[in-house]
Length: 482
Image 1 (cartoon, rainbow, N blue to C red):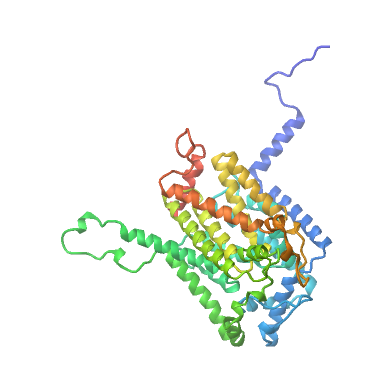
Image 2: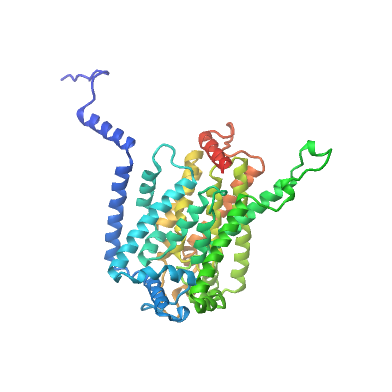
């Protein structure tokens, strides 16, 4: 039996033509299908959360704080929920929690989950904006697709399960850092975030350090030759150290002081209680040795089998602060030398440093894993490197595999299992800090290579900047525009 072949110029089968037409329509208008995929993922997430009957315990604490303010009770003497949890945020946060007292608890829980999912999409959008991605797809469509995947990572899952505010804080910070430093009100988001939860104030420190280094470099440049003779003229470099980054840091500091002043005027007793001692009591937040605490303090406590690691944590925190902020500033400076995605490198390095040095960084605080993983994925695509692809995949596995849940844990036990962990369990319960430390080391190496003269995107045996030269050029131009 002989078979005849279809001539090369003949039309394709109807099914193939239909698939090609569908693919073409999806590429032309990807936002609608991306929205459908994200809604399907969110619905599955919602159903999965409901099967576990989440208490949203932190949301209930926030609601109790708002109620304490309304009733005129002592905010920092308050205890809420079955776990007898206290208020730990500055009093300004309690003022923001006042609207939580209005709806009934079931309505409040549903509204909090929907708001969290919306904030997740916003965080994905800002993370992509920080990376100047995507290049060929509308950013809203890409943000919806990223959020559909990110909702299943452990920090986001736990944030939504507890009704936490981590997504709001991260969104405020990224909203600030994706704007031009010279824009009016740039820095307000960081200041307000620090007023809610003190740790984002480290971003203002980073901006100030970056601005001071740039000012120092500007003053060290030689003057123009035409100023060597004749009467001296005023030089802007002789004035105060002022540039957009210092201005943004100053606005952030002013916004933070504004939140403190507002709470001092409206809640004077609680203001004095918090700043008079409660702010220094990390034990109010929780026990340092619990596996959920993914900071250096938690790692040191589990390593020493004690709830108070003392000097070891302080030494590690100071070292991490110096190295982390140094890496962040170096990455920001390398952007002026052509480092692609310099803003993403520096911002994420500062966020990781913040999480490492905080006395308590619960696993749900690590929602910054979203921009971190996206950054590594974009670098892997730009460099077309198997090694970078493996690094991005490993980062995704760390945050999407729920590793902190693998070790024995009982937060209600008088002597929790974390004080008896073996070597393997200590490593598993330190997965986020270890990943963060590796990321800071990679950031420092990437930045120093550029600052020392090695062009980004260089590959042995080929011209600098190729392949991936388009991405490198785009990143350098974006940094230059800032």
